[in-house]
Image 1 (cartoon, rainbow, N blue to C red):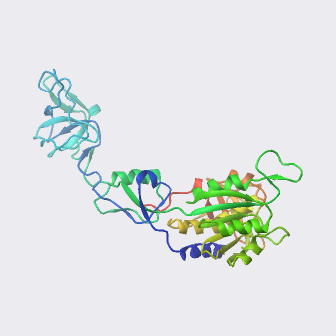
Image 2 (image 1 turned 180 degrees about the horizontal axis):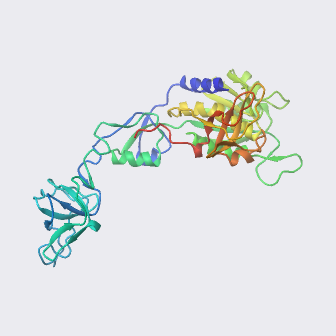
Image 3 (image 1 turned 90 degrees about the vertical axis):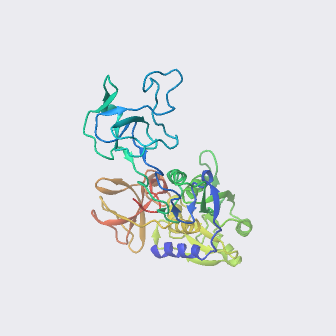
Length: 412
C-alpha cells in the first residue's frame, strides 16, 4: 500500500511541470505557491499603536496636546472638543516633546520620541488638561514596533504551500498584488456501469450512483479542477473513445477494474498502449484499484466501483498523484494512538474510518467496501497493518481534506 502511494507521487513527478503563472490575489485561492512567499515590506512598516488611547512621552502626568489640523471647524479650547488625535492612515506626525500626550487611534503611526501608549480606559484627564495613568506605564507598551511580524525579505511560506484565504490576507499585507502559482491539474471523471441511476429510489436491480456526486467535490479539495463528470455505459468502445479523447491531466474511472464480463478498463488500457504502473494494491477495501500512464503521457486512476473501496483508491493513488501535479508540498505523515482494538486483514493493509477522541482514534462501524455511512461521519482513515491493532497502538492517519491541517507546516 505505501509503495503504491509513493509510486503514484513519483509518476506524477515525471510529468513536465505545468507552467507557473502569476494570478491576481482573488484568483489564487486553492492553488499552490510556485515560489516561496517572501515579505516585500516590514510588517508593520512603521511603529503603530496597538490600542486606542494616548501616546505619551516621558514620565507622567502629561500635558495634553492637540494634533495640528485635527479639530473640526468651530471647535474651541486648547484641544478642541472634537480633536480626534492621530488617526490611522494619516501621514508623518511631529515628534512628541517630553512630558506631553496626544490622542491616538489603533493602527495610527506612533510619533517619534513616544515612550508608550496608555489605553483610554487606563487614563484620565484633570481639570487643567493633564493626563494621568491609572497604572504603571511600561516603556513600549501597546506599541507594535516596525518589523514585529517580519522584515523585508523574510520567508513567510515555502513553495508548495496551499493558498488559503488566510494566505491571501498575509500576501496582501506583505505587499503582493499577484502570486506566482501552479495551475490546478484537470481531472475528468468517468462513471461506468449500466446499473446506475442518477435520481430516484433503487428499483429493478438498479442502484443509485453514489460516486458521481461525491468525486468531483472531493477532487476539488485535493487541488484539482474537474472539467467533467461523464457516465459511460458498459461499452468498451465508448470507454475507449472517452479515455483517448480526454484532455484532462488525470482520467478517473469508477468500476470496471476487475476481470468480470463487463469490466472493460484493463482491455481498453491494453488496446490504447497505456503503461500499467499499479495493477492492484495490497489494501482492503479497494485492492483492485489501478494506475496507468496513457499513451499521451497523462494518467488514469481506476477506482473500484464499491463506494468505500473507491475512497480507498482515491486516497491511495489519486491523492498523492494530484498533490504532486498541483505543486503542493507533501503533508508530513503523522500517527495517533488507537482507543479500541481493530481487526486486520491477514496479509493486507486495512483503511478504517475513525473519529478523533481524547482517548485516541475510535474506529467506526459500517466500514464495508460498499458502505459510506462510516466515512460520512469520519475524521479520516486509520492505516491498520496486517494482523490488526490493539488499544494504544499508534497508527498512521489519513485525514479527510475537510478535517486536515493546513499544508506547508508551521512557520511561527
